[in-house]
Image (cartoon, rainbow, N blue to C red; front, side, top):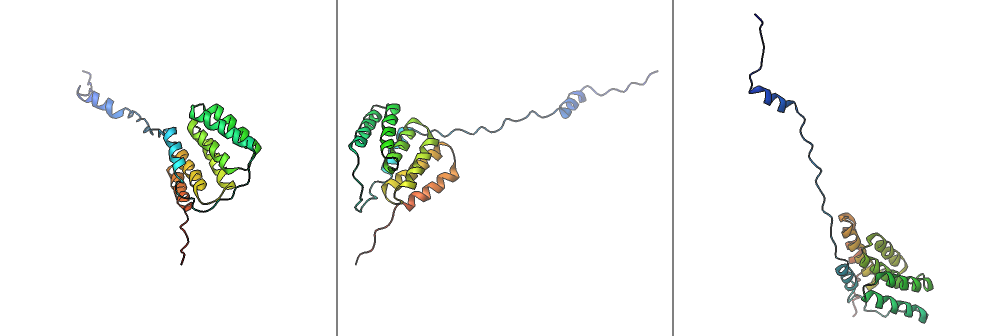
Length: 174
């Protein structure tokens, strides 16, 4: 007589489950941050409201620059960002160190949704322009909007601090 060793039938499924590998869990999906470019441009342009209370001295500008900028603003109003950028680039070629034109191009890039280029132009504008006042505030608000869209909370916090530094309290007069 042969002696047969067999497992009770109810143990077989339990052993199979116990020996199987757990199914890998998918990595948590990080939701992309959706930023409205039109709203972002509006926040940038209003960031410096009320910051300039002193006289600003600006050199006379070539009328051709103003013509290109007028064309750029008209194209932007028509939501033709390609034509607006072409006109703004033409103005920038005539005045390559004009921080206001560089910032305007950053804002056009925000309107197109090119967050990285927008940040690059905003930082360049900051390096060329005043370190306080409305242009400074627009520069750093551009960085805030770009880094928010790129989901970089640490850089957003730094940019917000730099934005606060654009506001200089008035001197106490006696």
